[in-house]
Length: 277
Image 1 (cartoon, rainbow, N blue to C red):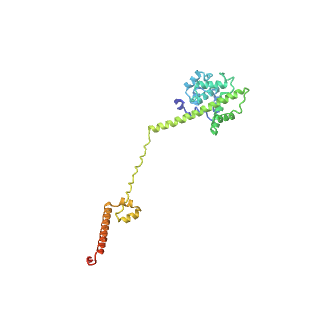
Image 2: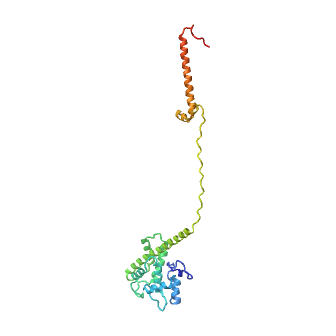
Image 3: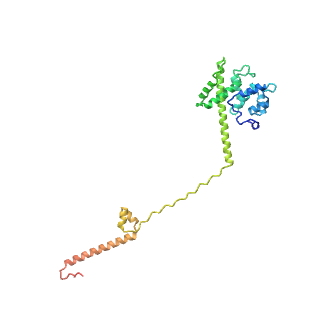
């Protein structure tokens, strides 16, 4: 939508989207005025006058009668405005020709474009409430909307159904596109004005408790607590171990020497034996 049109009273950012009331409100204005001026059409559609005049110049919208835009003109403008963000303008004109032929005055039209716009608005409203949003689901909604349509040529109904299906998907794509653009704008604002990031409190590491050193007790106590001699020897003061071994060896030698001396004494005659002290 043009920025200047957005500044006009009563206009909103969603002016291009078909509304639930369809063409009914504009019909009331046309009945009261007999036709709308260019400025009034701009107020209704949210478009700039130069844009509408360009569409007229290119033949996508019929020339107004005495500078008055009537139903056929406004309905075409509303349809183009609803689809232009997803479909090329020249393709929209071809789509209207596909539905109604190439008649410029609408005399041979199989459906009034204001009625087609009403169908589009109603189908969009029903599709929002539908569970199935696939192509077949949308076509079911359209069949329900156009169930009262009648025309001697059965091909007309088929063309209207195809055109409405395309138009609904184009409108949905427009809504998605606008939604993504709004989210992107919000992200850009956040990038320009980043919020201060709270510092994460530093975690203090708790030092590991060193293993307790077992006191140098007697060798038997360590063996009993550790259950293995090898473990006890690894934790025992090596000097203490050596001392025990040395003392044990000395006691053993003394014992052996004493036993040998006693045997010698016993082997001697009683009169040469040394008297015990």
